[in-house]
Image (cartoon, rainbow, N blue to C red; front, side):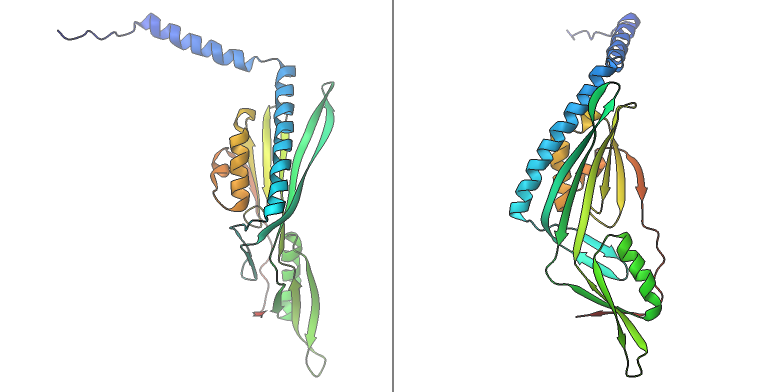
Length: 241
């Protein structure tokens, strides 16, 4: 004899749906003070976790599997993590002392300077690109026998300074995470709900810093992206070396 299958009645289905909605509404009705404290505790936990992680990276100095390009001028490939630090700042919000932001700054380097020659007409545009990317360099000109400038010569420190900021929007109860120069000369902003920025997300963030995986970018929707909008230099380029 076949077993009878139970089909829930319409009233059962409505009861189940309404219970689920009540649970969701209860979460939304969490007292504001409790929500603010939850975000503050989460950010403080992230600060301590990241502070320890960066301390270990500074000892290990792992290779970072990223390439930082300013096409067609410059590529800093596979630098090593050199050093970094984490900072925070607090502010008064609704009568409470809460974290305003948590910020990570770190530096990746290669050993040998990079020397690039450009035609005089291209030097200004190249200078602007390097400054916008926060790349350190020295500049001098090369003259011919008649003292006419033949090339502009840039001696570039092959280092990339990156930053990550975690900024809470307490009113909207979200956390904006801005990544600058993490995997390229570019800024990306992701918007996290507090429950998504847990320890596993921080682990993915460190993996992304090191170039091991980009899973972190898929953990939250893209809130915005800014690309450097700089004119391409005019004139021929030569890389010395």
